Amino acid sequence: MDFKDYYKILGVSEDADASQIKSAYRKLARKYHPDVSKEENAEERFKDVSEAYEVLKDSEKRAEYDQLRRYGQSGGDFQPPPGWRSSADFSGGGFTGAGEQGFSDFFESIFGAGGFQRGQSRAGPGFRGGRGFSARGEDIHNHLSIFLEEAYQGCEKTLKLQVPEPGPGGGQRVRERNLKVKVPAGVEHGKHIRLRGQGNPGVGDGPPGDLFLEIRIAPHPHFKLDGRHLHLLLPVAPWEAALGATVAVPTLGGTVNLKVPAGSRQGKKLRLKGKGLPGNPAGDQIVQLEVAMPPKQTERSKELFRALSEEVPFNPREHLGV
Amino acid sequence: MAVERLTGEIIDEQLQLSLHDLCCDGRVSAEFVLELVEYGVLQPLSGREPREWSFAGEDLVRLHRALRLQRDLQVNLPGLALSLELLEELQGLRRRLADLSP
Image 1 (cartoon, chains in turn cyan, red):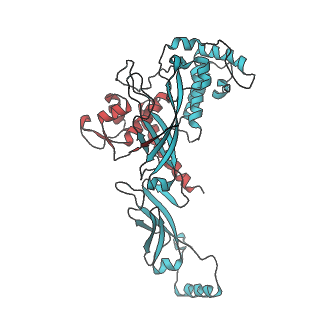
Image 2 (cartoon, chains in turn cyan, yellow):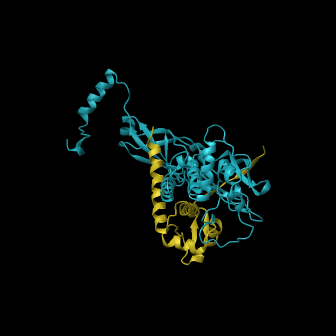
Image 3 (cartoon, chains in turn red, orange):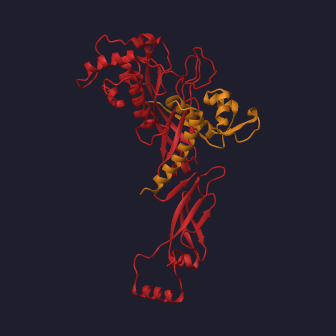
């Protein structure tokens, strides 16, 4: 495994004092918190930052880490020295409530599975449930990216999950699970779907936690999303806008015919009720007209436009005062 | 490796939760939910008394997010209310920006 330089991760020098470390951690935790950050690898960075702080804030762990850092920085594959055992590993004494995602193999190789102890209960403030040797497993939060067409029709997606489970010797090991998740039709961007009992296993007789997947719908080249409503810019020819026409419009459920009223102006909005994402109620598709010009003019068409300009007195820039 | 097939449940306004459901699913005390309601972080859809309250499914997601922010960034209750409002606005703006990008 690679050696993790916790000082570098927090951006502090080797002789940084406790307040500098705390301040660097707080700043980076805000920056990379998965609920706040938009960066793709935010979760990973946040985990690294939390892990680095977990070690450097504790003088005992920091001293042990500094010792190993001198030993392990030579580059290449890192392994703790033979016979290495952290004092944190002895003091763990069984289950200490590992992190939601657990810390890295690097951390565990130094401090053991029992090296992690947070100041605050993961169960949240004011929790008054059973505190014996039974506890419900942690919920898992993840993202699931889908296409708009998949959100419309519903889809089945395959997920790979790393689930911690009790291993030999009181430690934890990671098991990989393959899940095929049926995503119901009509799920909106940013909404969550819940898979009950698919989170981390419980402790003792405690039930497992739930798995929450936040849906991310990839931007679509034509349709824009607004909750369950869809927006589409629909180009129409000047004569279709002027005279009215029945034009074909794409929707996620297939092509439909839309009546464009005579005398429609650029930007006019027409509503196709129930043609957005399905639901109760289903969303609408809002079609906004965009008057397009033919790319090429012939001599005859130029003549017709000249006749039109004489026939229809029109200043499209009147509202600009010119 | 075996593949498990599962069906997801959408957490939206169709899913309505009582105060008891919210406390069990979020693993928090009723007192904590009451405080979040007081600060406007959670808003019951209906019910005058706490025992009659009904919350939209999204409030469970908001509660989880509030717990993570409180745990990881030590945000207090007024700070949570402000952060969640700003984060939701930011999420909407980021979506609009992604739609505008070619």
